[in-house]
Amino acid sequence: MEILLGSTLREVERVAVEEYAIPISALMQNAAQALYEVCSEKAGAPPAKILILAGSGNNGGDALAAAKILISNGYNVSVLLAADSRPTQLCAAHRIALQELGADISEISSK
Image: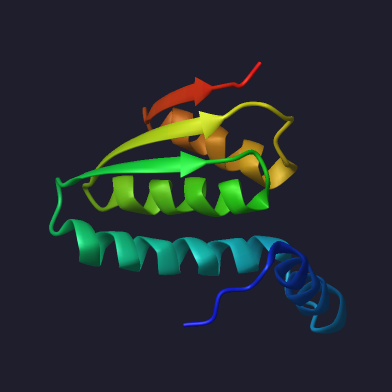
């Protein structure tokens, strides 16, 4: 497994979106599916409890999208959001979808 620095990851995303015309929403869904697979493997069968910690950027959106998949597959998911900054558009959209699913969402702030 290779771990990328944030600056490198942003460049990879930029190339995917600008040069290969892959929508950021598709990248987010792929990341969410991969996170779902890891969580379900590590947590075991539903209704295992899973805590998702998410920020307000697109990486947080990845986590919220994964939470939706986990909930849809019967997992008992709680979400803890860092609420120190305004969420990106995609992150906010996934949060709304989670709220519509009745997800357990809490916020923390350093302020």
